[in-house]
Image 1 (spheres, rainbow, N blue to C red):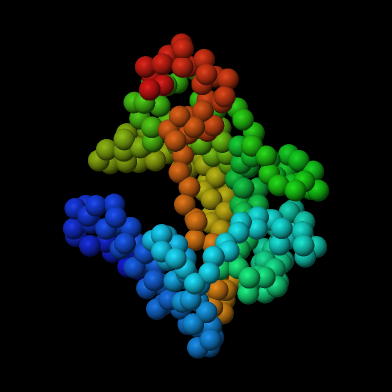
Image 2 (cartoon, one colour):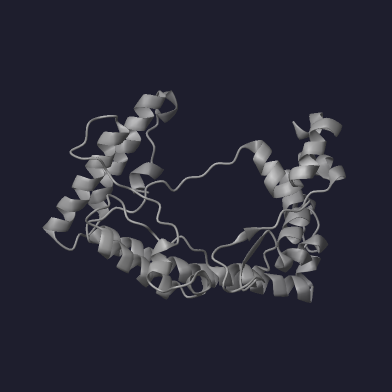
Length: 279
């Protein structure tokens, strides 16, 4: 994302979809301006590959068909790094992807970034929604698994609808993360009116303080992960290569409720037993 993308023009809301799309592609083309290329050849390669993709997005004929693949974890296994190692040893993961990209960079119009997550972070927070190698499934597992459950109960729609943020913080988060269990002791933040000492009393609790320390530890690990992967991304671009551009996901509201909160069978029952609340 370039700085320009964060500074939308004042008339952004008045632009039609085609105009917004054109503006986004212009921002994409301008992204090369902020890259310190290692050579003039690298700069030319980057701009050529980028323009090739932009031409395709505009439904124009490119100089050749662009090749952009989702390599997934292939770069890891192709270079002798298993998934468990990769999600705990970010440096080894980055080295595997760098080697894969060097071998196939000429053929590809966008290269692959490490498709890993910082496992130590969710270890610290005791994340319940997934199982990953060494945590719920064997270290030899080749990916992670979703642990479906009824994380919002049948009779909790009213509480969720009335105050989603409060429900998320004091009910959902403690169920989703073992580290957030102490949040059950914290009252609604809307109780903090004028002099707040009484409402802030839970901060004196040892388990609440331990939770805050875990959040700090997780934050430091996220920063370490970001530093390593960020350096990898910069080096790829400085050498004149693009990273995969498709970095956005979206959830349909029904999937959000079914996957994240209620589970498959409960939400199917909700469709018949409490459809108005589900809607």
